[in-house]
Image (cartoon, helix red, strand yellow):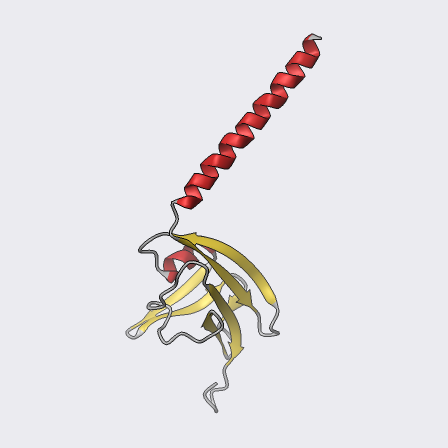
Length: 133
């Protein structure tokens, strides 16, 4: 009987701990302003990564990317350029195209405005220097 009581108390303790962690995690994410879906696509149009990320008021897309991915950025006078996000890179006549909800944004990575529920896709795209794309 003593072993059964220990087993029941241990089980109840584990359930209580799981419930506490669940509600703490839920309250942490409820403080967030919103959620974005970030999708990385290689040159064969294959999704190599898809991640839902949370953001808060004032976060920039560069901050969100840096917090959630391995990112290399180069600063230019006109703005920032993404050289690498995880396995996507801009080497060998490629660049990383950005799509916000399926459309090319009118601003660069520094100026893209996003909202809760947006999807941002980064696509490794071939660049032909003779024809400009």
